[in-house]
Amino acid sequence: MPTPTKGPRLGGGPAHERLMLANLAAALFTHKRITTTETKAKRLRPVAERLITFAKRGDLHARRRVLGTIGDKSVVHELFTQIAPLVAEREGGYTRITKVGFRKGDNAPMAVIELVLEPVTPKVKRSKTTAAPAAATTEPEPAEVEETETVEEPVVSEETTTPEATEAEESAEAASESDSK
Image 1: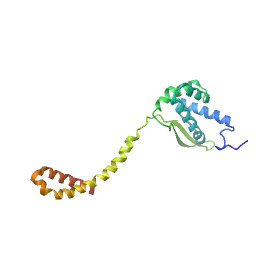
Image 2: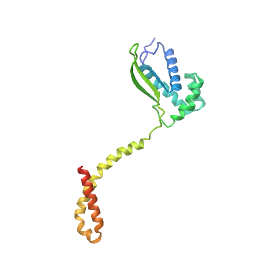
Image 3: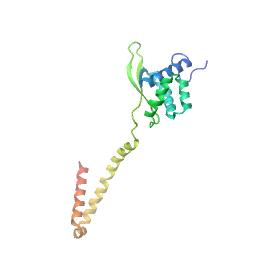
Image 4: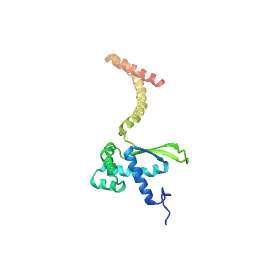
């Protein structure tokens, strides 16, 4: 028998591993979160995410592909009708694995694998927050340039518009004070 390329199989042979992962996936879709060993959770993640991707497609062929893996019609129905609409906007990363410590009997590392059903926050907000500090760093530089201009302009601008010149000077002084803080 050739040596497995993905490491040792869970529970013995490949057929038993497929059945175990199918049962874990069914339990995950039913309960939305399960506690298992870290190794089983890490092996379950790609299986569950692939099944959720099929459920997002939503057509008959995708439903039959998922039924071939899970086999329980009620779980497949729940996956297609309840879970798939909740993750429709998400482009992957449907599961989250959290380490929870060690099992009491054999000290096996345990983990909780759960479905991520929260709505996706758009990345546009993050780019605005990163752009705001960049804009804040560029604003003080023009304020310094305005100070030099206001020093040259008061002689010319006092004849035409004195209030505007004083406003420009006050804004330049306020900007320099905020920079010094």
